[in-house]
Length: 145
Image 1: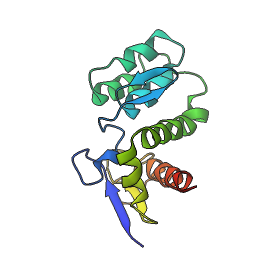
Image 2 (image 1 turned 60 degrees about the vertical axis):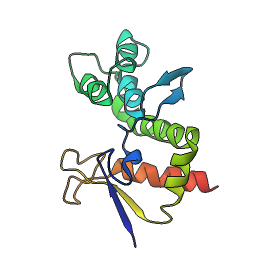
Image 3 (image 1 turned 135 degrees about the vertical axis):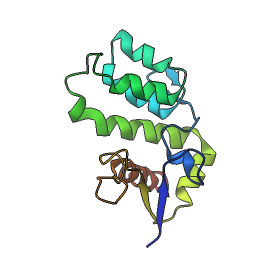
């Protein structure tokens, strides 16, 4: 079975990265990237949510979201995967070229290939959980229906 690995936004499937420059409209607002939305939801309903939305880049949004100097919502561990799914689904339904790119992967396994993350990615050596890749494949299945 084919495997598609992605990480950098400059790669052939770089649009699969949450850092790709594709705004999403969720919660009645435009978010510069799906990364901005995901990280901001760690602080939903607080001023920090808007601060993250306004971050100048997805990298800055990610740093803000990972900073424990901001109070993390208490249910974050329980809701983070559903929020990631919401962000990814919005991105691939709101941008037709991205929808086509995702559907064109057929039945390939999609892997976020990075040593930097063993939860959302593959840990660099395949030992990670690849939850972002799993969500992309689930969204692909939803878009087919």
